Image 1 (tube, rainbow, N blue to C red):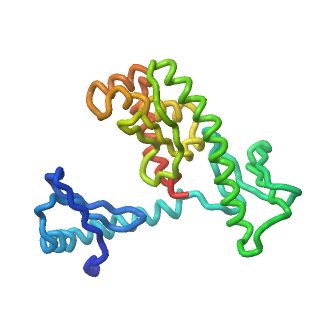
Image 2: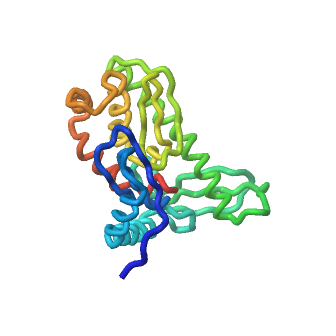
Image 3: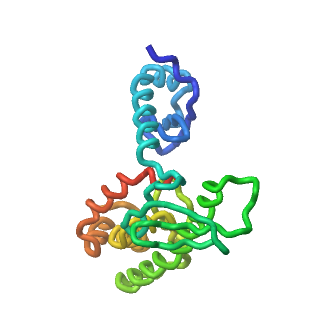
Length: 233
């Protein structure tokens, strides 16, 4: 018998009509309507404790198997191609792609308070973000012109649950980790967010617009859903 689950977060919403339990790397969240009592939530969570424990076990296994790890020999994707991570010392910090190897050159000036893997991870994230700004921004410009839409601002963030967003102010925000994916996957996310400039919802008309420019969006969405572990690095 599992122990009673005591650590969980209650999130109430006036718009919500049903209850739902979410299990992720941050813990257990219970989303309920505003009128639901703490006692009801506690009793419901206790009834669902076996299910919650199974979800936590699966998540822990997936994180161990699929999350990116900054260690020599780890596999990292860049624009859809997989590379083996390696690093060595050099005159200045840089990243070289040599065949199937993603080689990080560690500069001579390094903080003594961090181990090599921590320094490599920090620089590698910086490098990936720089590549994302250059590569993905070009795709946004291309598709905005092709779709005949205008956005007011383009930003990049380290989202932990999404690949992009579009605000009512016309601001497009993309997850820089999209640079791990092939360009046709990047294009799907870009088309998705640019379509929100016309339809700020997920109505049938929105999906029809997405499908006009990305007929196989379902397959590409499924692919990204299988890569959720990417966003945890």
